[in-house]
Image (cartoon, rainbow, N blue to C red; front, top):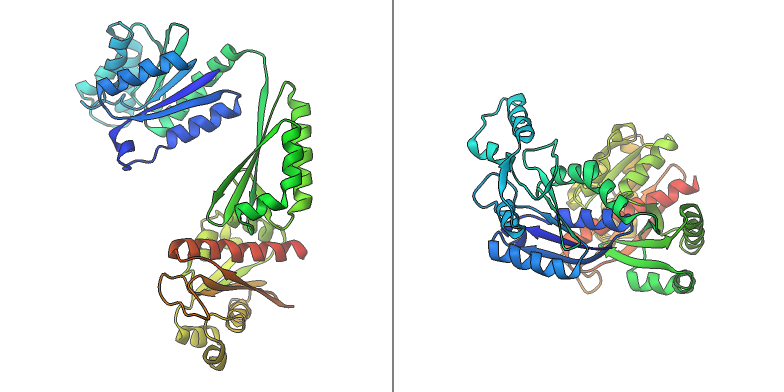
Amino acid sequence: MKCELISVGDELLIGQTINTNASWLGEQLNNLGFTIAHGLVISDQKKDIVNALNQAENRSDIVLITGGLGPTNDDITKHTLTEYFNTTLELDKEIEQNIIDYFTNRNLPILQTNKDQALIPKACQVLPNSRGSASGMWFEKNGVIFISLPGVPYEMKGIMNDHVFTKLLALKGEGSVVINRTVRTHGMGESFLAEVIKSWENNLLKDDLKLAYLPSPGIVKLRISIIGKDKASSEEKLNYYVSELVKLIPDQIYGYGNASMEGVVGELLKENNRTLSTAESCTGGNVSKMLTSISGSSSFFNGSIVSYSNQSKSELLDVNEQNIEKYGAVSQQVVEQMAANVRLKFNSDFGISTSGIAGPSGGTTEKPVGTVWIAVANKDKVVSKKLNLGYNRERNIHVSSLSVLNLLRLELLKN
């Protein structure tokens, strides 16, 4: 069954609000085996909504509309749908009481515009909203299903989970199952990674599985999908191909699904009962921020020193001034000393460090912008790595942070 997503809102068109609703709906529907054929973002104008509905009716089986159901004058989706389906509004007493209770329980005043949200098109089936005052609506016309949902993400998701997915699956009936697995990688660019796994990918495609490359700074996600009639056999086949992929790029795969690099590293530190401290120069505390975003990070994270200047490197981290003068702050010698000494300063099992030229200025012929050194130290050794990144400052900071955490991850797996 072909689905179409229509997102209503000027704020989406001008970039004021990111359209997370369409992203979430697309992912959920795809996982359930529905085809997402079209997606539109339109303004809060009646003519634009009507045009979008006309197009959708002629080419899709299921149309999901988000936005424009609030109490203000610019929320016109419900009134437009009432006209489009040639019906009228009527007061739903049960919804009205729910709205009154919603505001009363929160000690909020109830305006007439709020009560008016209990006016529902007669031609629709109500999709109750337990998280807000704007009800979802289910229409049918010429064999096409139209589902109108509030634009507030958690309200929209609540209605979908509580009411819509079950109804859609019942309509879909028995049929194929769709299973997706996302493999998260770091350390290889998209084109190089594609070359390394080329034979594996060819076998995958021959076996009727699909592969999508989803690159972002420092990370390439590989989404593997299979469509089959039997869930158990489909999962078995998918698991086989994932295991074969692990054999090809064991060091690059750091997690699956929605796993984050910092989350994976944090779990490894906790599992091994190890502690960590950081010495950051070019990343300016970003690594520490990533780590402390994890709940329970106090069990493994001891502290950080952001030694941005050469003086702070020598005074706070005891880096040899002669090394800084001879090799420069962005060097293997300096970054290894930073990692080793911050470990001792905080009495940690591991110390990690970063030092580089984030840009866009500050580069030289010998050390251009994007030159970064990273290091990991424990009581037995120090390992380091040189990165050659680009000219974008934000990207360089982000990729450097991921890279030093990945270097730590690999060391943790060895111990």
